Length: 173
Image (cartoon, rainbow, N blue to C red; front, side, top):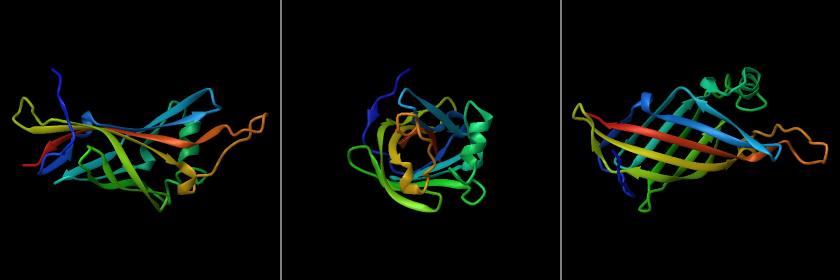
């Protein structure tokens, strides 16, 4: 079954279905590939077109335990001091959400682009919508400056980080 896409969020309150949702990030590494990660604990809701959400930094996961530990340390997310990254924004007529991301205590404007599914009724009678959103941020704007020099003088890690959210939301009763 496929769903159609629309550019407007239905009115009402929709709450995250965490089992069918994911939030992740991707950053270019050494100019030849990327490393990716996900955040296991996420909360989100859409209330009359306003999207709010947060992710627990301590639940960041990568394919390497040492890398994950480094990301949680002060060089990157400083999870102990700044336990969450958050977004708050309002749906725009073109299907984007304009708002702000707060990371490491720094708030910057951000626009999430992507798609919004038409509402569907699940097998249990619940109305649901799906949001597939992404944005790219400059990590240095949030005080995440760690990098390593390559032999040619370039940097190992890109400053641009792609954030993705694939959200399944159920209408509140």
